[in-house]
Length: 284
Image (cartoon, rainbow, N blue to C red; front, side):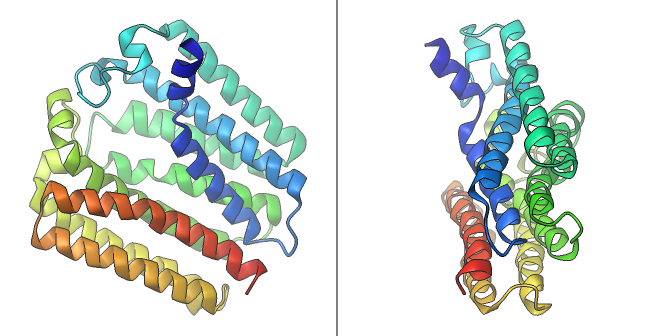
């Protein structure tokens, strides 16, 4: 039971997404993928993401106890103690950074550290309970994962990684604000100022659309600038068209139903984008 609870603290679905983001950044920068380096990168990302996720559980255990979705988390029920969680978080974080320094390079380790810091400190401690801007700046954690992967491939190159990192940065608000509409009652009860709690569902749907327009536009820049090819370009255009279509449905009918569809599509949208980055580079 304690092992299962510890795994729940790691938020493995987020960790896998972070690892996939870093892997895509690496694949975008190399002509030939080194499986050993890629494996070490994925492990470091999983460990670092896990360390920050455990800290998030630890710090938020008071508001988790209030929200229906999170009231059965291990730190709320007492299945895992705060001391054990702190030790697990620290151990995972130190192991991740040590692995990155010893087997990859210091630039990768620096980006990994910044990603952990943004999620654990900037988002969880500083912004989450203070402002609806929380998730905007918190989204930088995913951008640092992509930059870490790119730094493993080619530390001196900056333009393509920066453009892709901007896309990752813009993805998070569209993804999370849709989820926040679904969980607005929970956040309201816990006193967390997520955007739907502050401005309502209708205005949030317009914010999602505006952000997604910037997101899709940014995703096309590597194609328009000739940094990635037509496979990526047409793929990003198709994925973005579906996303914007669902956003428009949400604007027309700001309901839990369409918020759910927007949230559900945002995940394959991101994973699809990451896949076509690698495919365009190595198989087009």
